[in-house]
Amino acid sequence: MTKLKDYISLLRVPQWAKNAFVALPLFFDGSMTDTHRLWLMLVAVICFSLAASAVYCLNDLVDVAADRLHPVKCQRPLASGRVSRAEGLVLMLLCIALAVTACLLLLPMSAFYILLVYVALNVAYSLLLKQVGILDMLIVAFFYVLRILFGGAAVSIHPTSWLLLMAFLLALFLVIAKRRDDVLVMEQGGSSVRKSAQAYNLEFINLALTLVATITIVCYIMYTMSAETISHFHTEYVYATSVFVIAGILRYMQVTIVAGKSGSPTKVLFKDRFVQLCLIGWILAFVLIIYLPQWCQAA
Image (cartoon, rainbow, N blue to C red; front, side, top):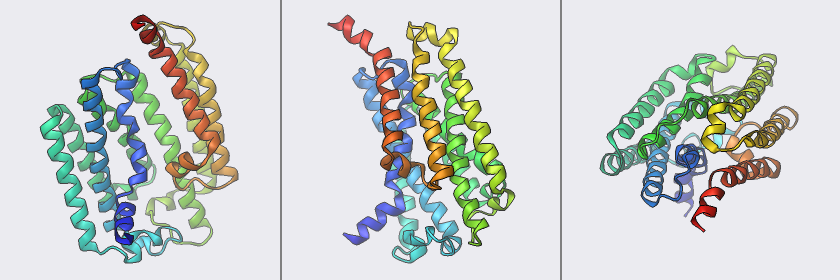
C-alpha cells in the first residue's frame, strides 16, 4: 500500500485537477448535455492526465539530484529513494503508451497532434528550456492553452480567442506565484531546483505578479462586456461573474504574498475555502447563464 501511495505521488494524481481546462471548450459551448461529446471530453481528460503524469515522471527523473537539495521536494518519491529510477521510467513509459493509444483509438487525429506537441514541448522544457528565465514561465502557461486546444479538438469545438487568452493569463499568474516560492527558498540561502530562479528576485516576482493579475482582471472584464460574449450567451450580465474572478485573484495574492503558501496551486485549491467558494460561485454563475435557458426550454 505504501508503494502504491508513492507511485500515486510520483504521478502527481492531485495535479490532474489542472486538466479541468480540457473541459472548458465543451462547457462554454453549452454542450455538456450532449452525451457523445461528454464521453469524448472524459476520454480527453483521462488521456491528457496520463500524458501529464508521464511528463511529471520525466521531470522528476531529470531533477532528482537537484530535488534532494530542496527543503520540500527532497520528499518526492524519486528524490527520497522510495521509488527507483527504473520504476519511474517504467511508469513514465506506461502512462505515455496508454495516453497515446487511447487518443489514437478514441479521439480525432487533430487531438493526437496537439498531445504530441504537448509531450514534445514538455521534453524540451524538462531538459533545457526551464533553465531560461521568463521563458520557463511562459512555456508552462502555454501548456494550459494546449489543454484547451486539446479539449476543443477532442469534441470538435474551436475555442474562442478570449478563452485561450484568459487561460494563458490565469496560468501565467499561477506560475509566477509558484516561482515566488523558489525565489524565497533561494533568498533564504537554500538551493533552488530551478536555475531560472537565479534570474529573478522577490521584487521582480512581486511586480510581475501584480502586473499579470491586473492584466488578467482587465481582460476578463473586457471579455464579459464584449459584443461577442453578449451575443454568444444572449445576456449582457456576464460581467457579474467578474466579482468571483477579482475576489479569487486577490485571495490568491494574499495567500502568496502574506501567507507565503504559493508552492502548489492545487494545494491552495484543495485547502483554501475562500478560493473554493470563488471558483464554485463562478462555475454556478455560468451554469445559470449557459444551461438554465436550455433546461427551461426543455421543460
